[in-house]
Image (cartoon, rainbow, N blue to C red; front, side, top):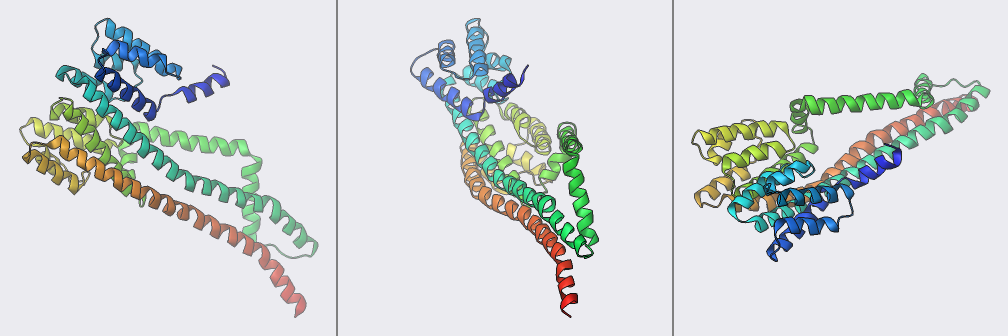
Length: 357
C-alpha cells in the first residue's frame, strides 16, 4: 500500500457522524414502509466512503440471505459494538425503526461530545507546540549571537546556558534520535493502554483537572448506552454485559460486570451498583435516579434524564478544562523562556556594572 492509499484509508474511515447519518436514514426509510434489506441498499448507493458503502452492500446481501439484522451488522466488523446486540433486540421486539432512531440519537450525541472534547484539547496542544518552537528558536538563533558577543569581550557565560544550549543543539542536530525516542515513548504508552489498561484507566480517574471530565464522560456513556439497551428489549443482565464492553474505562467495565453478577443473584440494579461502588465509579446522582426509576418502573426514562444532565455538565466542563490545561502548559514554558532570557542578559549587566564602577 502506497502513501496515497494510506491517506485515503484514513479519510475513508467512518466516524460517529457517519453512523448517525446511516441510522437516521434507516429510521426514516423503515418508518416510510421500506424493508431492512432495501433500506440498507438505498443508503449504500449514496455513501461517499467506500468502506462504509461496501459494508452496507454486504449487510443488504446477508439480510436477503436470511441472516438476522444484528448478525449482518456484526459481520462487517465496522460498526460500534453497541450496534449488533441493540438491533438484534429491536428486531425481536418488533421495534426496529424505533431502535434505529435511538441509535442515531446516541451517535449524534457522542459525535458532538467527542468533537467538543477534541477541540478543547487542541488549544493546549497548539500552545505547547508554539511555546516549544519559541524556546528552541531563541536557543538556536538568539543565544549563539550572545555567545559570540560575550566571547569577543571576554565575558563569562553562565554554565546553565551552555548546558541548555548543548542539550537543545543535540536534540535538533540528532533529530532522528529525538523522533525515535518520542516514538518509543508513544508505543510504550500504547502497550500499557492495551495490555495494562487497568493501570492507565485508574490513573485517568485520578488525574487532576482531567478526572472530573473523564468521570462525567463515563457516567454519560453508561447512562446513555444502558438506556438504549434496556429500551430495545434486552434484560438488565444482557444490557450490562454489552455496556461493559463499550465503556472507555476498564475499571468501570470490571465494576459493571460485578453489578451484573449481583443482579443475577436476585438483587436490584440500584442495590447492586451501590454494593459495588467502593471505588466511587458511579455518581451518586446516577444511583439515586436509577433507584427512583426502579420504584416507578421507568429505569430507561431515569437514565435518559441522567444522560441529558451529564451532557450539559460535560459541555460546561470542556471549556474550563481547556483553559486550565492551556495555562498549565504556558506558565512553565513561559517561565523557562523568561529565565533563559534573564540568564543570557545577566553577564552583560554584570559586565556593564564592572566597567562603569
